[in-house]
Image 1 (cartoon, rainbow over the protein chains, first blue to last red):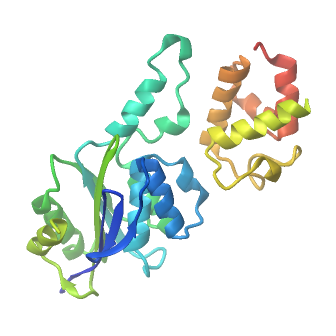
Image 2 (cartoon, rainbow over the protein chains, first blue to last red; image 1 turned 30 degrees about the vertical axis):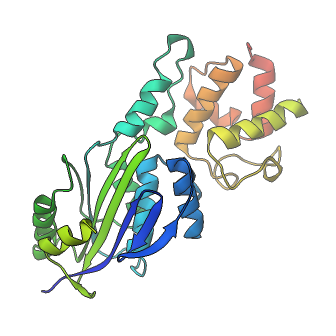
Amino acid sequence: MEYFIHTYCHIKENTISVNGEPFFASAALTVPEFLKEAYQKLAISYPKFHKMDKMSKLALISSEITLKGVENGENVALVFSNCAASLDTDINYQESISLPDNYYPSPAVFVYTLPNICVGEVSIRHGLNTENAFFVSAGFDADKINAYTEYLLQSGKAEKVLVGWLEVLENNYECFMYLVDTKGSIPYSKQQIITIYNR
Amino acid sequence: MSDLKEELKSKIISVLNLEDVTTADIADADPLFGDGLGLDSIDALELIVLLDKDYGIKLTDPKQGKAIFESINTMAEYITANRTK
């Protein structure tokens, strides 16, 4: 079976590009502001978005773009990774419990203190009951991700694979997401992934 | 009591990040969970924290929350009767 990169997107430095073409740019001063503007640009109506942490918002926006046209319930595996795990939200949560006189741990923040929560958010949004994994590595590890993607496809565990690198830490963020499918115009290979990641 | 109800609506919108909701959208007797505002179990826990943080009310039995958080009316009545700050 031959596979292709159906769609890919980059989100960083207040811009979103899709298949290498500019899609959205913002002058927002903070990451949450930028993500909210991107949400509005996509005309999504999903109130739960506003309750999510930054990484889940990033995952939701990028998956909304890359899964466009994919029907709910299709066998799309999710393979996400990053470097800082959920550290951004961990810091936020830790600050809420650092003062003995103001000790009010937030349940809504606490539920995002695991990196793979964003996988669940995307699965819920798109009705996916499929294979998923979240890897933590120093950088986008094309070797590992490619090997796992090929395993999922060749073993028949998935018909498509949505791969995401979702790095968020305080005001720094970067997202690279792509959908590996039997349809598309860019032949899928590890080298191709490295090439488009570095664009 | 009406001031407290308006205050609660503003706080709920803020604490629960209900971006698409205004205070005018929440009627005093509207159910907060289920068909009303559609709040979930995590929201219920946040409301318990809100009672503690802003009104000095500690709910020792989370099951009490079901009756207290039925609507803005029930919340306001409970807070008025039990607040310590």
